[in-house]
Amino acid sequence: MSHFSNEEKAFFKKNGYVVKPDSIAPEQIDNAQDAVWEHIEADRSDPQSWINAGPTGNLPCSDHPAIAAMTTDTPLYDMAEELAGKGRLRPPGNALCKMVYPTGHKNWHPPRGHLDGYLIEGVADTFTIAVTINISRVLPRGGGFTTWAGSHLKVAGYFQRHALTHLSGLKAPGFLHPAARYEHAAPAGTVCFWHHYMLHTASMNCQKNIRMALVNRFAFTNLRDIMFDLPFDLWAPWEGLRDIDEGGAL
Ligand SMILES: O=C(O)CCC(=O)C(=O)O
Image 1 (cartoon, rainbow, N blue to C red):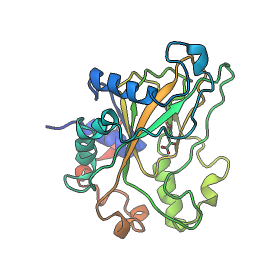
Image 2: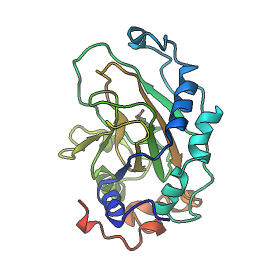
Image 3: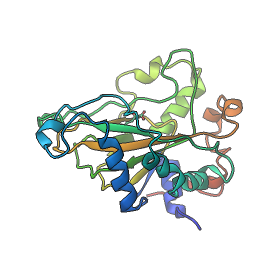
């Protein structure tokens, strides 16, 4: 069974991300919410206490059965394989649990993106495709995961001219201009699949609810052997996208 239409695959190639609604059963979402609430330092029944709550950073519940089930008992890994190619991805680990707490004010600022896997100058350690799973309903300006359409192609072009270990030019102001910003403001159960060269971040949360999301990253089995070639032929190893022409993507 195919999870993605050819148009969605073409959209992914062109824009570097693709969004799939209704990918997780409501009961699994409820269970995942219960799991993260065990670690949030706030009163679940008192929204005032959610403002600037903690802890910051990933919640330590990736091994909770309800979080592990998001990888083992959902179609997400199969879906990632449909894009990357059957059998092309390493066995997955569990997702990271990422909250964005409300700021308590309405002074929202547009975010700036970053690239994963090359954060330490001089070290290249990357992945292939990631999924961001909303496990709460996310409203606009409510802390949503954010991408910049086509930035994966700009990053590939950059890495054709610079070593993977050389990040400074990517941080230059205006690198993204005029890429369109996509904010993953969407109901719980909506999943964003994104390319590893995608600039991304979470936005500021000026809404009332905690933005609850899980992020999982999947990697080609032979990624370490091919990562230095990827900028020059970005889609060559993506067997699931071989016959997809992004020219006609929406
Ligand atoms: O929490 C988010 O939506 C952003 C996560 C992120 O930046 C990352 O996983 O590298």
